Amino acid sequence: MKRIYKVFLCLCFVLLSVACSGGPTDAQHVDNARDYLDRGNLNAASIELKNALQQNRENGQARFLLGTLQLRIGNAAEAEKELRLASSLGVVDEAVLPLLARALLSQGKLEELQALSLDNLKTNEIKAEVLTAQGLGMIRQADLDAAAELIDQAHALAPQSTYTRVAKARLLAARQDSAAARDELDSVLAIDPVYAPAWSLLGDLDALDGKLEQAEAAYTKAAENRTTNNADLMKRAMARIQQKKFEAAQKDIDVLKKRVPGHARVNYRQGVVSINLIQGLIHFNNNRLPEAREAFELALRVNDRDLQALYYLSQTHLRLGNQQRAEDYG
Image 1 (cartoon, rainbow, N blue to C red):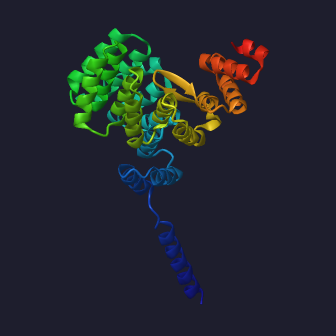
Image 2 (image 1 turned 45 degrees about the horizontal axis):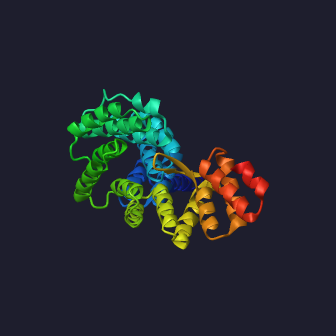
Image 3 (image 1 turned 90 degrees about the vertical axis):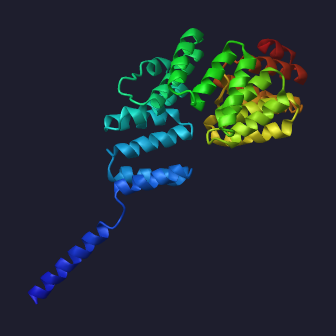
């Protein structure tokens, strides 16, 4: 009887071990996540990566792919954190640095971006990506000569890189050479007709030239072809407001309100613009003055020096008959 009991216990132990070892390993979760990322299924990829990290928090590839995913959805701070962890866990600079450079650029961490070293990078294309990001950082700092040097180096290393060529177009635009910038963008779109950054910059050039219908169409192309399209929707809303397409502009703002916590601000050309400011402009032009006043006040809570919000809040109070309040903000 004891022998039968021992055999039964051994059988239970074996069955339990098989059951426990039957699930995917952390490496298998990472492989699944990579496949989902390649197919654009970001939610499924996120679940697989979380499962991988639950099993092994020091899986460098899981950290790297999570950083990649965070960058694709526009969460640059989380992307940076995961990419730095991936690097500390042995993921090579060739994989990490191009994405880390973009994450730092997106956050405006320009000193850290310029400090990235290319010493461990072997391929020209990877070096060009980092140099391009550094060049774009220099454009933000208004050091166009330094930007040109970096972008020219990148272009020499990877002349067909769409990322680098759009950066070159952005530099030309910053130097007020709109025609040359447009030529460069036309060349990029001939290579890749759905490259969203090229469409977005083309929309900026059209908007600056007062070609609002073309700008709206370009921003639409950009928004349709990338996951993180908040800035494209913001710029399209502005183009639509200027064309008095207030209902269409409201649709863009409604999408942004659902996405952006606190309805705060979205990157817009070289700076940021409050979603509430745009909402206020829509209400103001629709003569919904109390709603416009509330929206402009919310915009000023985010940035009390927002000149557009101050001006339109003053005008709103004036139209409401609040002369003293209008003067306070005027």
